[in-house]
Structure formats: structure tokens, C-alpha cells
Length: 413
Image (cartoon, rainbow, N blue to C red; front, side, top):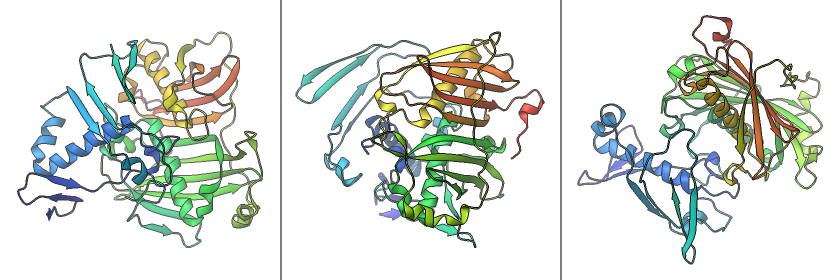
């Protein structure tokens, strides 16, 4: 086979078949360390397009411009070996085959009913109105700073990371950034991956250039370092930089609490953790996200209801941290269209989030009904209180880039 220069694609001798190398990443896996079937179908569709682009670049160019297509149907069959080979070490049941026929469209806000029945043993029919991902990606070059405290490596976002407006959604940015920080620090200390922790808070600030510069395949540089290690918690800091200009595009922190999975309560770090990061013991504890007060009784609020689906539960058997950001953004997107906020209006998928701050207060579980309360704290800034009944679950603050020329449109990055 002929290998196309500068890429991971190979062409067959008759120039009719393109082959691409690909590795799934940690964030592609669910709580059972499977790649979910919807991720497989969506990702495979993109990989097919990328391979087809190798045969004829006009195809993908036309799909991005004048040629608009929708799927009529798709069918994928998986070998039982997929679940064993792609994620070694766990043998669980997975979807063997999925067939989909698209009949009508559904739109934002539509209420859909999913009917299902067992057609034959092991088969459900629904109708509706490279290395292992546990290892570091092969070929990634990690660089240590002179003081051996900061790890830097290259990363590129892919086509499937972008939403319908051509932007990377804020929940994808926060989740991916957290994973990348972990990947980097795990190169310094592999035992970090053995710790069981809950996220207490996280905060990420984005440069306006992030949305204009970052495209699929843009070369980025990721840096991560440990800022603080206490008795039961650690704080990590990270940056994503444009490799060509060295401009900081994303900067943030994340605080994790070491917990006992049995009691769901904090527990002290093991001795090796204290010894490894003893040099941080004399450093002052960095500022993190703190709880904000409830709005006064006269504040206009917009409320959005969410039922936690099974797919949002992670390996800690609770709602994964990134989904709360998605719930809050969806709340804001619906509210903005309905004129619920004085300055945050229009299609938020086309507007960039400047900063997101999240404080996790309680857990939620599969099937829980959550109420997302939202209000505009200041021009361009929305606050959210996620509740489960009377319990406060999560607080989120999102600041949007605005076009009014006010201070809310400016970023420190």
C-alpha cells in the first residue's frame, strides 16, 4: 500500500481504498470502560469521511460547503473481540450490532417517546418520533521543565470535538482539559491513576482567540503541574497554548478530593503522595472556587428540568462532572432564546464562553430529577444552582464573550 506523505493514511494499489490508523482515548470510554455504541457510530462516520478525503479532497470540501447531506441509515457490526482488545482486562457484554433507519427529523425541545421490545434473544428493537485507552497515546512526546515539576506535550482536537456551530463546547473543553492535566502529571507519577477522587471544583478561562484559532488538527501545547497537595485534596493547574504563537488559549485549575468509595467521604492521601509532593507543603494554598450566595427574592430566574440518564453516570457511580456544565449550558441556551436574561441572548452555540467556574456540592444519581435555576448576575455572566429537591448539588458560573464592548467582553488571556 502507498502511504500518503505527511499523514497516517495508506492507499491501496488500485487507489480505491484508504486506510487510517486511529486510537481511542480515555475520555471515549464509559463507566464500564467500554466505548459506547453511539460514540462508535458517530466516530466511525467521521473516520470514514477522513479516509474518503484521502481519496478525493473535493468530497469533504463539498460537504463543508455546498453539498448538504443527512443520514438515511447506517449499520455497524462489532466483533466480540472489540470489547476485549480495545479495552483489555475487562470482559463485559457489549452491543454486537446496531442498525438505524432515520424516518423523520426531530428538533430542539421535541419530546420523543422511545418504544423497545425484544425481537429475538439478545436483540432489542427501539423506535422513536493505539494502544489501549488505559495507556498513554503511542507516539506522544512529553517534555519536563528544568525543575521537573511541569509536563508539556502536544495535542490536537479532532473533527468530532466540534459542535454544529463549529465550536468546541465548554463541557468538552473542561472535561478534555482535566483529562489532559491528568495525562501529563501521570507521566511524572504513574501512581496518581490509582487514586479514587471526586472533583470539588474547577475553573477554566478562555482567550477569545481560542474560538478563532483552534480548528481540527491545530497543533496545541498542553502544560500541567501540581500546585498544592493537602491532607485529602490536591490542586492541579494547566494551560493549552497555540504551538505556533505561544499564545495561552485556555488556563485553569481543578481541585480533587481523595475519597473512600465505600463511605463516599474524604480520606488522607497515602504516604507516597505526601513524600512525592512534600516540596509543596510550605506553599500557600491557591484560591479555588467558593460557594456563592442565593439571589435575592426579586431576581428573575429561569428554571430548566433535567432527568439524569444512565449514560451520564461515570465510574464513581454518580453523574459525571462534565454533564452538569452541559445541563447548565442547555438551560442558558433555552433561556437565552426565550429572552430570560437581560444581555445573554440569541443562539449561545454561536457565542463563546469566556470563563466557567464549577463547585460540586452533592452527588446526583441515575434517574434523579434536577432543577437548574439560572439568573444573570451581571452583564454577560450567568449563574446556575442545580438542585435535587431541596439539596444544592452544583453551582456554576459562566461568563460569555459579548459584542457590546463592555468589560464582560474582555479576557485576561
